[in-house]
Image: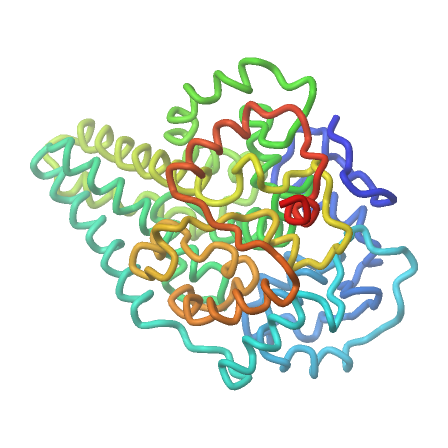
Amino acid sequence: MYTRSWKDIKYPSNRNELMNIELWLKSKQLDDGAEGLWRIHDDLYDLTSFVDKHPGGSMWLLLTKNSDVTEAFEAHHFTKSAENTLPKFFVRKAILPRHYPFTFHPNGFYRILKEKARKYFNYKMPPTSTTSKIFLDFYFFSSIFLCILAAELENIKLAILAGMFFAFVVTCGHNFVHMKDSWRTYYYYCVSFSVREWRISHCLSHHLFPNTLEDLEISLFEPVFEWLPKQNKKLIVRFGSWLYFPLVGMVLPFFQVGNRIRNGVFMKEDYLMFLPLYLMIIFGKSVIYSFFLWLLVISVCGFIFSVIGLTAAHHDTEIFHEGDKPREDRDWGLHQVDATRDRREIIGNKYVGLIVFGEHTLHHLFPTIDFCYLQQLLPIYYETLEEFGIELNVKPIANIFFNSFLQLARINPNLITRKQKQKDI
């Protein structure tokens, strides 16, 4: 069992079970003290009448009913519109204390940074970037074209290229999954991924609680990958995972589809995963060979996506992982800084960053802002880090990539906080 790295915070229910997305939702409902409503800080709200009016789409509120949405509310609402609307839905104070340790004090790092960012954008939410739309549309339609061409010519190389482009659809498209509902999110289903699944495991879990026991992008891979430091971690997991990493990535899309079927949440949109296969069979010369090429496309997509996603920004050995000693200031924004690490070579390059999760810390701090605008906030971000005496968290790509595998092997927690390290220096 992992131990919590902060005192007096409840160990998550069902955390030692073989975790899945539906079980995680149920665990939050058990732990969050929302009393059947929506909890924000220590207040309870009844948003039932607002579900269909929610500007971001009804899915967000339907998924979070009977849970604590404090972190989601703070991170997802950039303007003050939601804050001004919320009081009309107030019901009463919550009985139980909050399950999570994070704070959002007015004079804390996150609130100060957020106010500066709001001022920079004139207190308005910047619109979706045309660049993001063009990139995503290009990768999607290129993927479809390459699938058809691969089937017609029975060309494995074209199928591999289609899989690579589909991986970029996932990485680039995740920008839209964080935002309000859009027809472009349907691209995800064509690559065997699910918007609902991503909004739970990625947006509501990983983004809000990175590298903690509440992070589904940690627990869903256990015991195959164990990124959290743990004394009794098996050798096969510590070092063998370096070898079977590619295989896990290749089967990831199929595994996710299987989970949705098993949990009874396979929706009508999920049938879009067969669109590339349907087109490949129509234009291909052989049904069997077209099916083989389709499996190859999805496998390559899963592999490339896994390489990018799982080694991008969260698993350097100096990054905070549950079990390490956290800083005393539990400001949510500082936790995001401690649990991410940006790659030096792609900072400020929105074209590369769109497909490899660039400006990653800022993306965690402001997930609903289109990625292409985040580089504009870099001066404000650096200024606020300096104001709070926080070290800029940047390393070369190769360093972060290889350290992500060293993190799999790490069994001893870091007992010195990041701020203490700065003082020692």
